[in-house]
Amino acid sequence: MAERLRIGMIGLGMAAAPHAKSLIDLRDEVEVAAVFSPSPERRAAFGGKYFFPVAGSIDTILDDGSIAAVLVLTPPSSHLDLVRRAAAAGKHVLLEKPLEITHERSRELVDVAEHAGIRLGVVLQLRFRKSIAEVRRLLDEGQLGEIVSVSARLNNWRPQSYYDQPGRGTKARDGGGVLLTQAIHTLDQMIALTGLPSEVAAYAATSKAHRMETEDVAHAVMRFANGAIGAISATTAAYPGFPDGIDILGTKGSARLGPSGALLSFLDGTERTVSDGTRGSGAGADPMAFSNDNHRAVLADFLAALRDRRDPKVSGREALEAHRLIDAILRSSETGSRVTL
Image (cartoon, rainbow, N blue to C red):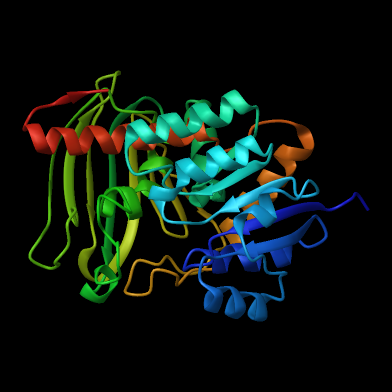
């Protein structure tokens, strides 16, 4: 058996549970050397539940030369500083989405990692779905023809208690609302299949369903370089939460992606489905109501990337594309003008 890679985890909040379960699943490949949270109570509870060694400070992890990489699962506003510190310590980073709270800080974060020569992976776990890989193959092979229309929708529900948590949905901590926190997954999948649109026109707002600083509803129309048009809709005001989806319409057929797979329909009358084999989507009041299958795939790819000395499948540079689109949607809403990407 190859020597296990030692890894540290920084941040033990809501996002940490599926990572912890995945690290246990991958215990033949990875050893959790230490976990850290600024909260002593959270450290004790997390370490006791998952039986991981607990560090009393971030420096304990960053100064340990035997630790090759860190998972950074902290609020977005802390990411740039932590990636700087990890890069200075020569440690690779697997970073929870989003990259940072603004497009500019996100670009700087990616530059820091690239200049330091460390690997930077981003937890956009839905990119690892079987259905995404299959639709990408069909598009590459021309089996769906030329794309004529694309739509992406996210209809989540979050109760007010979700946004009553300190910092939740603020520009200072999270950087934004539904687009950067929830819809980034849907947009990242769309971009992986269709590429970025060439221009967008959009509206974003805080609805009467929530008291919060940033947007909980956004709608955009978009045009692609080949002339295809499409639409994006995203909200956390859709009680009780409905399945998200991406529809790609081509000249030879269509692909309809839902939360657990895809329906493929072709002009010759044939249809087939692709199942992802995953459970739950987190669309409702419990945002963590999903299996850790895709998180395990992210971690497995990250470990393989370090062994093979390649970039992870979703690198920092790849993740920037979704940030570019979100930034364009918000700028269009603010200015009332179409924005060119």
